[in-house]
Image (cartoon, rainbow, N blue to C red; front, side, top):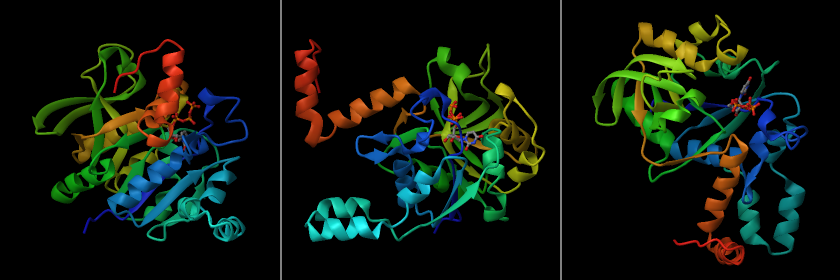
Amino acid sequence: MSKIKKAIIPAAGLGTRFLPATKAMPKEMLPIIDKPTIEYIVEEAINSGIEDIIIVTGKGKRAIEDHFDNNFELEHHLKKSNKLEILDKVKQSSSVNIHYIRQKEPLGLGHAVWSARKFIGNEPFAVLLGDDIVKSETPCLKQLMDVYDQTGQSVVGVQEVPLEETKRYGIVDFYNKNGNTYEVKKFVEKPKSNPPSNLAIMGRYIFNPELFKFLSEQKVGAGQEIQLTDSIEELNKVQKVLAYNFDGKRYDVGEVTGFILTTLEFALQDEKYKDAIEKYLMNCGYRYEN
Ligand code: UTP
Protein backbone atom coordinates (compact mmCIF):
# COMPACT_ATOMS: atom_id res chain seq x y z
CA MET A 1 0.00 0.00 0.00
CA SER A 2 1.37 3.40 -0.95
CA LYS A 3 1.75 6.14 1.64
CA ILE A 4 0.27 8.58 -0.89
CA LYS A 5 -3.52 8.76 -0.60
CA LYS A 6 -4.36 12.36 -1.53
CA ALA A 7 -3.85 14.31 -4.74
CA ILE A 8 -4.28 17.95 -5.72
CA ILE A 9 -5.36 18.89 -9.25
CA PRO A 10 -4.96 22.66 -9.76
CA ALA A 11 -7.59 23.86 -12.23
CA ALA A 12 -8.05 27.53 -11.37
CA GLY A 13 -5.95 29.13 -14.11
CA LEU A 14 -7.43 31.58 -16.60
CA GLY A 15 -6.56 29.52 -19.68
CA THR A 16 -5.67 32.64 -21.65
CA ARG A 17 -4.02 30.67 -24.45
CA PHE A 18 -7.41 29.20 -25.36
CA LEU A 19 -9.44 32.42 -25.30
CA PRO A 20 -12.18 33.01 -26.28
CA ALA A 21 -13.07 29.30 -25.77
CA THR A 22 -12.17 29.56 -22.09
CA LYS A 23 -14.09 32.76 -21.38
CA ALA A 24 -17.02 30.80 -19.95
CA MET A 25 -15.65 27.25 -20.01
CA PRO A 26 -12.70 25.98 -17.96
CA LYS A 27 -9.67 24.94 -20.01
CA GLU A 28 -9.69 21.65 -18.09
CA MET A 29 -13.13 20.84 -19.56
CA LEU A 30 -11.97 21.10 -23.20
CA PRO A 31 -12.40 17.59 -24.60
CA ILE A 32 -9.83 15.33 -26.20
CA ILE A 33 -12.21 13.34 -28.46
CA ASP A 34 -15.19 12.76 -26.13
CA LYS A 35 -13.67 13.20 -22.68
CA PRO A 36 -12.72 16.42 -20.84
CA THR A 37 -8.97 16.74 -20.30
CA ILE A 38 -9.40 16.70 -16.52
CA GLU A 39 -11.08 13.29 -16.68
CA TYR A 40 -7.90 11.74 -18.14
CA ILE A 41 -6.03 13.18 -15.17
CA VAL A 42 -8.58 11.95 -12.61
CA GLU A 43 -8.40 8.47 -14.19
CA GLU A 44 -4.61 8.45 -13.85
CA ALA A 45 -4.96 9.32 -10.15
CA ILE A 46 -7.56 6.59 -9.60
CA ASN A 47 -5.46 4.00 -11.47
CA SER A 48 -2.50 4.95 -9.28
CA GLY A 49 -4.48 4.18 -6.12
CA ILE A 50 -5.31 7.73 -4.96
CA GLU A 51 -8.32 7.78 -2.61
CA ASP A 52 -9.06 11.51 -2.28
CA ILE A 53 -8.68 14.18 -4.93
CA ILE A 54 -8.97 17.90 -4.30
CA ILE A 55 -9.56 20.01 -7.37
CA VAL A 56 -8.54 23.65 -6.97
CA THR A 57 -11.10 25.69 -8.87
CA GLY A 58 -11.74 29.37 -9.48
CA LYS A 59 -14.29 31.68 -10.99
CA GLY A 60 -16.36 30.13 -13.77
CA LYS A 61 -15.34 26.55 -12.98
CA ARG A 62 -18.76 25.17 -11.96
CA ALA A 63 -18.75 22.90 -15.02
CA ILE A 64 -15.96 20.83 -13.42
CA GLU A 65 -18.05 20.16 -10.31
CA ASP A 66 -21.10 19.35 -12.42
CA HIS A 67 -19.07 16.99 -14.57
CA PHE A 68 -17.94 14.86 -11.63
CA ASP A 69 -21.37 14.88 -10.01
CA ASN A 70 -23.99 12.19 -10.65
CA ASN A 71 -26.60 13.21 -13.20
CA PHE A 72 -29.58 11.02 -12.31
CA GLU A 73 -31.86 12.42 -15.01
CA LEU A 74 -29.31 11.69 -17.74
CA GLU A 75 -28.51 8.25 -16.32
CA HIS A 76 -32.23 7.39 -16.14
CA HIS A 77 -32.71 8.48 -19.76
CA LEU A 78 -29.75 6.42 -20.99
CA LYS A 79 -30.96 3.36 -19.09
CA LYS A 80 -34.50 3.74 -20.46
CA SER A 81 -33.23 4.05 -24.04
CA ASN A 82 -30.86 1.09 -23.52
CA LYS A 83 -27.74 3.18 -24.23
CA LEU A 84 -25.79 1.17 -21.69
CA GLU A 85 -22.34 1.70 -23.19
CA ILE A 86 -22.78 5.48 -22.93
CA LEU A 87 -24.28 5.10 -19.46
CA ASP A 88 -21.07 3.38 -18.39
CA LYS A 89 -19.08 6.39 -19.59
CA VAL A 90 -21.07 8.99 -17.64
CA LYS A 91 -21.27 7.08 -14.35
CA GLN A 92 -18.83 8.30 -11.75
CA SER A 93 -16.21 6.05 -10.22
CA SER A 94 -16.98 5.23 -6.60
CA SER A 95 -13.36 4.36 -5.81
CA VAL A 96 -12.36 7.99 -5.26
CA ASN A 97 -13.74 11.00 -3.37
CA ILE A 98 -13.54 14.31 -5.20
CA HIS A 99 -13.44 17.54 -3.19
CA TYR A 100 -13.22 21.18 -4.29
CA ILE A 101 -11.55 24.28 -2.98
CA ARG A 102 -11.48 27.75 -4.45
CA GLN A 103 -8.32 29.65 -5.22
CA LYS A 104 -9.49 33.19 -4.55
CA GLU A 105 -7.27 34.72 -7.22
CA PRO A 106 -5.22 33.00 -9.93
CA LEU A 107 -1.87 34.08 -8.46
CA GLY A 108 0.06 31.15 -9.87
CA LEU A 109 0.47 27.39 -9.63
CA GLY A 110 2.36 27.57 -6.32
CA HIS A 111 -0.50 29.56 -4.82
CA ALA A 112 -3.08 27.05 -6.17
CA VAL A 113 -1.28 24.14 -4.46
CA TRP A 114 -0.95 26.19 -1.25
CA SER A 115 -4.74 26.79 -1.31
CA ALA A 116 -5.25 23.04 -0.69
CA ARG A 117 -2.95 22.83 2.37
CA LYS A 118 -5.71 22.30 4.95
CA PHE A 119 -7.09 19.35 3.01
CA ILE A 120 -3.65 17.71 2.87
CA GLY A 121 -2.65 18.27 6.49
CA ASN A 122 0.63 16.71 7.54
CA GLU A 123 1.02 13.86 5.06
CA PRO A 124 2.78 13.34 1.72
CA PHE A 125 0.65 14.11 -1.30
CA ALA A 126 0.53 14.13 -5.11
CA VAL A 127 -0.01 16.99 -7.56
CA LEU A 128 -1.20 16.40 -11.13
CA LEU A 129 -1.55 19.20 -13.69
CA GLY A 130 -4.30 19.12 -16.25
CA ASP A 131 -1.95 20.38 -18.95
CA ASP A 132 -0.17 17.08 -19.43
CA ILE A 133 -1.78 13.78 -20.32
CA VAL A 134 0.55 10.79 -20.06
CA LYS A 135 -0.06 7.45 -21.77
CA SER A 136 1.96 4.71 -20.14
CA GLU A 137 1.72 1.07 -19.12
CA THR A 138 2.14 1.90 -15.42
CA PRO A 139 0.33 5.18 -14.69
CA CYS A 140 2.84 8.03 -14.53
CA LEU A 141 1.77 9.04 -11.01
CA LYS A 142 2.11 5.45 -9.78
CA GLN A 143 5.72 5.41 -11.03
CA LEU A 144 6.48 8.46 -8.87
CA MET A 145 4.58 7.03 -5.90
CA ASP A 146 6.78 3.92 -6.10
CA VAL A 147 9.90 6.11 -5.94
CA TYR A 148 8.47 7.96 -2.94
CA ASP A 149 7.54 4.75 -1.14
CA GLN A 150 11.09 3.46 -1.59
CA THR A 151 12.91 6.65 -0.60
CA GLY A 152 10.57 8.88 1.45
CA GLN A 153 11.85 11.79 -0.66
CA SER A 154 9.74 14.25 -2.64
CA VAL A 155 9.95 13.50 -6.36
CA VAL A 156 9.07 15.41 -9.53
CA GLY A 157 8.33 13.77 -12.89
CA VAL A 158 10.63 14.88 -15.73
CA GLN A 159 11.22 14.12 -19.39
CA GLU A 160 13.75 15.31 -21.93
CA VAL A 161 12.71 18.18 -24.22
CA PRO A 162 14.58 19.80 -27.15
CA LEU A 163 17.03 22.40 -25.79
CA GLU A 164 15.26 25.27 -27.57
CA GLU A 165 12.06 24.45 -25.62
CA THR A 166 13.65 24.53 -22.16
CA LYS A 167 12.60 28.17 -21.62
CA ARG A 168 8.96 27.00 -21.38
CA TYR A 169 9.57 24.64 -18.43
CA GLY A 170 11.00 24.19 -14.96
CA ILE A 171 14.43 22.65 -15.66
CA VAL A 172 16.49 20.32 -13.52
CA ASP A 173 20.21 20.80 -12.84
CA PHE A 174 21.35 17.38 -11.61
CA TYR A 175 24.61 16.06 -10.15
CA ASN A 176 23.95 12.34 -9.97
CA LYS A 177 21.93 9.81 -11.96
CA ASN A 178 20.89 6.35 -10.85
CA GLY A 179 18.75 4.60 -13.50
CA ASN A 180 15.83 6.95 -14.14
CA THR A 181 16.31 8.83 -10.86
CA TYR A 182 18.31 12.07 -10.58
CA GLU A 183 19.70 13.86 -7.56
CA VAL A 184 19.16 17.54 -8.09
CA LYS A 185 21.47 20.47 -7.53
CA LYS A 186 18.93 23.09 -8.52
CA PHE A 187 15.46 23.60 -10.02
CA VAL A 188 15.27 26.56 -12.39
CA GLU A 189 11.92 27.95 -13.58
CA LYS A 190 11.82 28.83 -17.31
CA PRO A 191 15.55 29.63 -17.85
CA LYS A 192 15.87 32.40 -20.45
CA SER A 193 19.35 31.17 -21.53
CA ASN A 194 21.99 28.52 -20.65
CA PRO A 195 19.60 25.83 -19.41
CA PRO A 196 21.45 23.48 -17.02
CA SER A 197 19.99 20.41 -18.80
CA ASN A 198 17.12 19.45 -21.08
CA LEU A 199 15.23 17.61 -18.31
CA ALA A 200 11.90 19.38 -17.91
CA ILE A 201 9.34 19.13 -15.10
CA MET A 202 6.18 17.62 -16.55
CA GLY A 203 3.25 18.22 -14.22
CA ARG A 204 3.42 15.18 -11.94
CA TYR A 205 4.78 15.53 -8.40
CA ILE A 206 4.92 13.85 -4.98
CA PHE A 207 5.72 16.13 -2.06
CA ASN A 208 6.40 15.89 1.62
CA PRO A 209 4.16 18.35 3.51
CA GLU A 210 7.15 20.56 4.40
CA LEU A 211 6.66 22.11 0.93
CA PHE A 212 3.80 24.21 2.35
CA LYS A 213 6.22 26.09 4.59
CA PHE A 214 7.90 27.53 1.48
CA LEU A 215 4.68 28.03 -0.46
CA SER A 216 3.26 30.05 2.44
CA GLU A 217 6.01 32.65 1.94
CA GLN A 218 4.18 33.43 -1.34
CA LYS A 219 7.21 34.81 -3.15
CA VAL A 220 6.43 36.08 -6.61
CA GLY A 221 8.65 34.61 -9.34
CA ALA A 222 8.81 34.26 -13.15
CA GLY A 223 5.86 35.82 -15.00
CA GLN A 224 4.90 37.68 -11.78
CA GLU A 225 3.29 34.45 -10.49
CA ILE A 226 3.79 32.45 -7.29
CA GLN A 227 5.69 29.59 -8.89
CA LEU A 228 5.66 26.03 -7.61
CA THR A 229 9.20 25.44 -8.90
CA ASP A 230 10.61 28.17 -6.63
CA SER A 231 9.28 26.41 -3.52
CA ILE A 232 10.54 23.03 -4.79
CA GLU A 233 13.97 24.63 -5.07
CA GLU A 234 13.72 25.91 -1.46
CA LEU A 235 12.57 22.48 -0.24
CA ASN A 236 15.49 20.84 -2.08
CA LYS A 237 17.92 22.94 -0.01
CA VAL A 238 16.73 21.41 3.27
CA GLN A 239 15.36 18.04 2.17
CA LYS A 240 16.51 16.44 -1.07
CA VAL A 241 13.93 16.42 -3.87
CA LEU A 242 14.46 13.79 -6.57
CA ALA A 243 13.65 13.98 -10.28
CA TYR A 244 12.35 10.85 -12.01
CA ASN A 245 12.37 10.40 -15.78
CA PHE A 246 9.11 8.49 -16.12
CA ASP A 247 8.19 5.96 -18.81
CA GLY A 248 5.38 6.94 -21.14
CA LYS A 249 4.37 9.39 -23.80
CA ARG A 250 3.43 12.81 -22.58
CA TYR A 251 0.96 15.00 -24.48
CA ASP A 252 1.03 18.76 -23.95
CA VAL A 253 -2.61 19.85 -24.05
CA GLY A 254 -2.07 23.21 -22.33
CA GLU A 255 -1.50 25.12 -25.54
CA VAL A 256 -3.44 25.14 -28.78
CA THR A 257 -1.02 23.32 -31.13
CA GLY A 258 -0.36 20.58 -28.57
CA PHE A 259 -4.08 20.26 -27.99
CA ILE A 260 -4.85 19.83 -31.70
CA LEU A 261 -2.00 17.32 -32.23
CA THR A 262 -3.10 15.30 -29.19
CA THR A 263 -6.67 15.21 -30.46
CA LEU A 264 -5.45 14.05 -33.86
CA GLU A 265 -3.17 11.36 -32.42
CA PHE A 266 -5.82 10.04 -30.02
CA ALA A 267 -8.36 9.93 -32.86
CA LEU A 268 -5.91 8.04 -35.11
CA GLN A 269 -5.44 5.51 -32.30
CA ASP A 270 -9.20 4.98 -32.00
CA GLU A 271 -10.76 2.35 -34.29
CA LYS A 272 -13.98 4.36 -34.31
CA TYR A 273 -12.43 7.44 -35.97
CA LYS A 274 -9.19 6.20 -37.52
CA ASP A 275 -10.47 5.27 -41.00
CA ALA A 276 -12.45 8.48 -41.50
CA ILE A 277 -9.48 10.64 -40.50
CA GLU A 278 -6.96 8.73 -42.60
CA LYS A 279 -9.29 9.00 -45.60
CA TYR A 280 -9.77 12.72 -45.00
CA LEU A 281 -6.03 13.36 -44.67
CA MET A 282 -5.33 11.36 -47.82
CA ASN A 283 -7.95 13.35 -49.74
CA CYS A 284 -6.21 16.51 -48.55
CA GLY A 285 -2.96 15.15 -50.00
CA TYR A 286 -1.37 13.99 -46.72
CA ARG A 287 0.06 10.52 -46.54
CA TYR A 288 -0.44 8.77 -43.21
CA GLU A 289 1.47 5.62 -42.43
CA ASN A 290 0.85 3.75 -39.24
P1 UTP B 1 -1.07 27.07 -16.77
O1 UTP B 1 -0.20 28.25 -16.68
O2 UTP B 1 -0.82 26.11 -17.87
O3 UTP B 1 -2.61 27.44 -16.86
O4 UTP B 1 -1.07 26.33 -15.37
P2 UTP B 1 -3.31 28.81 -17.16
O5 UTP B 1 -2.70 29.90 -16.37
O6 UTP B 1 -4.77 28.56 -16.98
O7 UTP B 1 -3.03 28.94 -18.72
P3 UTP B 1 -2.66 30.21 -19.62
O8 UTP B 1 -1.18 30.36 -19.50
O9 UTP B 1 -3.43 31.41 -19.10
O10 UTP B 1 -3.09 29.79 -20.99
C1 UTP B 1 -1.01 24.92 -15.17
C2 UTP B 1 -2.17 24.42 -14.34
O11 UTP B 1 -2.23 25.14 -13.12
C3 UTP B 1 -3.50 25.71 -12.91
C4 UTP B 1 -4.15 25.78 -14.29
O12 UTP B 1 -5.56 25.69 -14.18
C5 UTP B 1 -3.52 24.61 -15.05
O13 UTP B 1 -4.28 23.42 -14.90
N1 UTP B 1 -3.36 27.03 -12.27
C6 UTP B 1 -2.53 27.98 -12.79
C7 UTP B 1 -4.11 27.30 -11.15
O14 UTP B 1 -4.88 26.44 -10.65
N2 UTP B 1 -4.01 28.55 -10.57
C8 UTP B 1 -3.18 29.50 -11.06
O15 UTP B 1 -3.13 30.61 -10.47
C9 UTP B 1 -2.42 29.21 -12.22
